[in-house]
Image 1 (cartoon, one colour):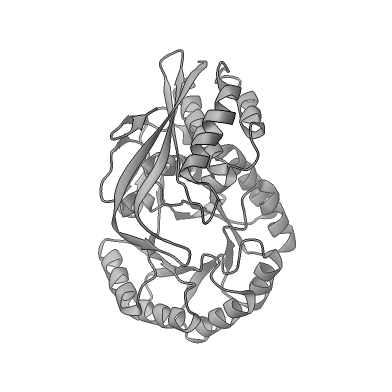
Image 2 (image 1 turned 180 degrees about the vertical axis):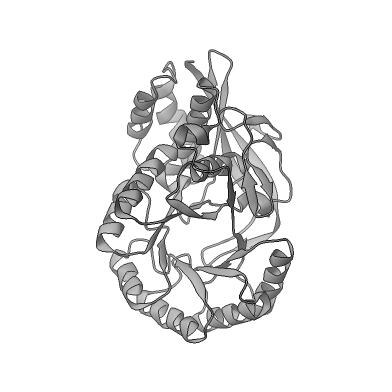
Length: 362
């Protein structure tokens, strides 16, 4: 099974409602789709969102990285020599993690097809089903409380609340949501780097004093501020999850050894795909640090890859893979099966895609 070509396309999927965080507001998924073609007729699919405010990757940058750098290093290689392919992918260009992730996902799709098995079984096969949270975008306290009630009515047991845009208002938001949700529902908060360290400590302690029972706080401080992250971790009781601070296994190792966070969030678009994500899982297992698996605003293509990783690895104990359920439609046939908060995988080999509608390749 040798690689003969790599095609690039674009997919556009409207969201059910605007997605708002401390960093951005988005109305649709606008992602780059990759199709890796082989001489046996097998095709692997991957995807990358241009999340410039987090990864620095734009649509043009993703396409350029694949077309001008990655593609020429992979044509002619055999999927059976998987480690060689991964080394060449990693060395083809520095950074550009989203472009690498899109190709990496497509290659792992082919790897599963080569051995005629669902990818999660080849990676570990720890379980067959996972449960995701759902994101509540940052809005007025009243709107967020209503959105929370609607999510609970749909069966969600864990809500991930976007905060980080005005400290006192964030506290009001969480009080309104907890009152609306009751205490049978888990509340996670994600500041998306929106606070400084001291501001985060103040805000989180206020939430602790109010008895809001927050399960965890995700990335309370800017990504580069490892010391600030540690300061927050050391001074609040709410477990701290490092997200934008972790792009690589080396980042994960540094944060774990510094004890700068209690948990690590793995996102394939930050790690450059499954290959490096597996290394972070191994590091986390060594140190006994639990992981969350997360996603950007992505369609079911790349989220399916994250689902397979979560199904494979027991160290991944928390799941934030709600991207596809935030979309108004699903043009992807096959892949992960979403029934609101429950996610399962079929027995098809690789990532299990059959058809992806609405993508024009060039």
